[in-house]
Length: 217
Image 1: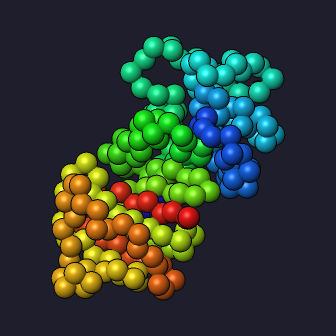
Image 2: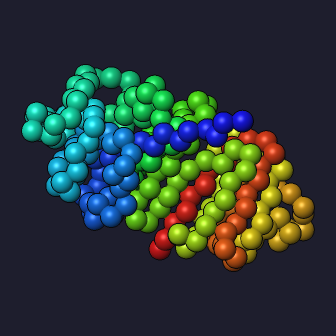
């Protein structure tokens, strides 16, 4: 059986400005790069040339041809965010692994909207991760691993109940609750602030989708 080819895409979103150093140090320059709206200004400051710029540019000046990128202009009044438009573009183009930078900011509604993009990707078989210097947010469906890049990790039932959750290699496992497996219902909070004790933690989930948030203080 032929090995599945991973096509990587990085999306640079617009918030916040203090992500600049992290973006510059962690962006995959070998991936296909999309700047979402004012994210192109971050790329410009870092000397990074995106392949595509997508946005309505209501929160920034409009990009010009000096960026040497394809420019897609969206209507200001629409039913989705510029970041979501960038995610959908990447999925349509066949990218199977998407990393979104600059998508966790002071606007809680924008951050939550960006998190919902993860489910759009999951339903289409695309792995999507939202990352900044303090957090990494992704979904686990079936099986996943957590390494020690971040100090803490938390698991929440995402958009529905989760059944048969097992955690290996972390401080808190199902055994902490006197069980072999855990059922995490929508709204439960007992999966918060766990940490990896070995080289990595293995997470399995028999039914449902887990929201994995890795964090540093």
